Length: 286
Image 1 (cartoon, one colour):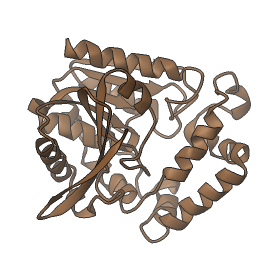
Image 2 (cartoon, helix red, strand yellow):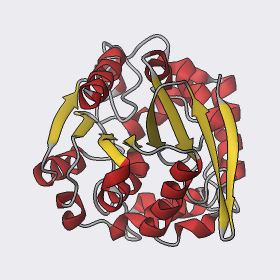
Image 3 (cartoon, helix red, strand yellow):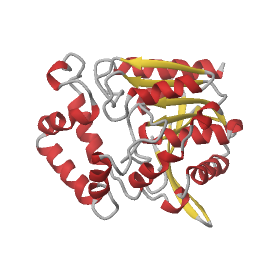
Image 4 (cartoon, one colour):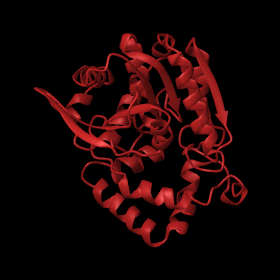
């Protein structure tokens, strides 16, 4: 059973969840998400891991003020581990949570047992010159995102297959017709569930701003065992992000996956995603 809590300091608060018992894994969720994220959690909890997920700065009930910089946000996540009496954890960073995981592993090597990057941003991502950035600034700012996600959720619930097809190109470089052999029968339902739980708060625009803080020097500073997982067909975060991390993180392993796109926990190859990360985590314990 998942439990929820809130860690409060003088300067802000962090909402978090804990699922499972065992070796701790600190998850930095992706964009538009929060401590209620679910992708990949079942396999981890069933294989002896305890998953601690803070809602990152500006997401859920977590104060946006802790995210003035990536470094400051990571200071708060370190304090959360201390509050929970966790001496060391595996760090798993997903998509737009990649920069947080990278800076955390660099800044707190004594707290980081390993680093896993899944579909992760590892350098400056979208810029104000990009059409996607400009659209996100309108659709997912703190004043409009509630209505944006309300509409997406409503359409998903009424027309699940239609919205899955419409969203497909935002996740995959493959054409939908060419990806049918990679799509699992459960993918549409799981995408509907994702759309129902997603919100942007202040967090997504913070994410867009913070990616420019990352440097190659940050990647080169990571010394823990690192697993980099990325789909060959990711259209949300290009594979060049994975390659950059692999080229610059000393003790890193690169796994390019045959999943249909950015959501590597979906599709007919999703079990491979689970098996690879679980085996990696178990190897770093021994």
